[in-house]
Amino acid sequence: MSKGNSKQIAGWEQSNARALSVRVLERVKDGAYSNLQLNQLAKASKLEERDIHLLTTIVYGVIQHRLTLEYWLKPFLRGNVDPFVKELLMISVYQMQYLDKIPQHAIFDEAIQIAKRRGHDGIRKYVTGVLHSLERQGLPEFTTIKDPIEQLSIEASLPVWLLKQLESEVGHEKMVKIARSINDAPAQSARINRAVTTQEQVTTVLEAEGFEVEASKVTPEALRIKHGHVASSKAFEDGLLTLQDESAMLMVPNLNLTPSMKVLDAAAAPGGKTTQIASYLDPKQGGIVEALDIHPHKIKLIEENAQRLHVSDQVHAQELDARKVDEQFDDETFDAILVDAPCSGFGLLRRKPEIRYEKSYADSMKLHQIQLDMLNAVAPKLKKGGNLVYGTCTILEIENDAVVQDFLEQNSDYELVPTIGPLPQRSQLTMQVFPDDFDSDGFFVATLRKKK
Image (cartoon, rainbow, N blue to C red; front, side, top):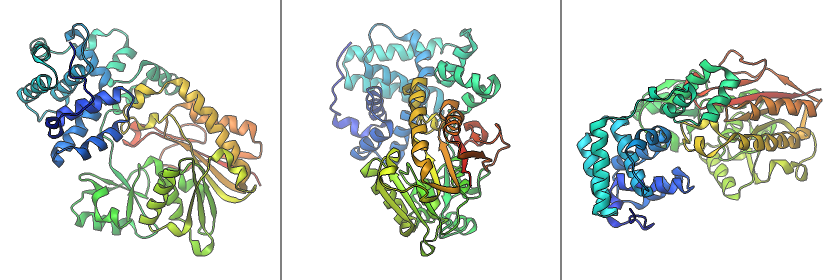
């Protein structure tokens, strides 16, 4: 059942959101990044704003619910199905089940037209047959899956290994809560740029622009924006705020910053935490943050963000692997150090849904060593009495508490001190925010103090 596999996008597809969503999903299946493909195809397309929104919704929705959609479709598929046909059926079932404003006849008609135009009459008939069988017979129930973890895996579209790992770490009840929250839409939050404005002032500006704003329950530095794209606001353009998840803002306050401090941000791109640190510093008093990243194009990104947020004078960005800080800085150079370490990203599943299928526990084990190497490399660069704040956007212990424990065993001149945050401490001293706690990203923070 072949044809339709041409990599070339036809002219008619450029103005068809559903046809383009099939193209993006095929490329993602081949290993491409969904956000990059969406940006690329949306820019090159002839789609209106409304259709770009539909394209984005369908692509992220299908990736997010892939295991569920495959389970529903499986009884209706026969023989070898072309990748484009399978993705076309996936987007059709996704729209039927999750987008209640689109009438079923419109979903069917569009799918049949795409099948015919990208394929041939045999493909058109096949797609028509599958869709009408779905309509007649209904979708298979999850209750037929006997194993509760496998059932939840299909229902929440999360791999079995991840659910079992979480269950062993946080217990069955909490694991289920996390799984059931993971496909909710992420909240839109912004960090108030305390260097130039206040919560009250920026709220007034946003409301005047027509945004619905509420204070964050997670941190006083954040606002939640209910509707509209805050990145296109005048407040954003003028540097009064920046897009950042609430839980990601919890690291910086634990550095105990004062205006004259010299601070190291060891893995800084795209600069959210760098600019947050900079907002506490005064360059006239010698306050500066050294921001490191291993990618040259990301250094430019940090600098652009610092400029927009009016903190360029206290940000110095350079290309350097944090594990090689010894080449650049003397011991006891910094008053505070932040390590927002590279991680598996399992706290970001709402924003980066493909992570759930691409990453494994073996990846987390490899990352554990990289994270530990980074901490060990920067530890001598901190002055006595200073705070080294370690954080990740994941929810697995091997990249979080286990890294901290290994670090403390290898560095007797450091101690764990309480991390300030919005939650009653779950473990003794560190802080783990799970995605279901505040509808934010999952995030881990530990505060390590160098003994005097």
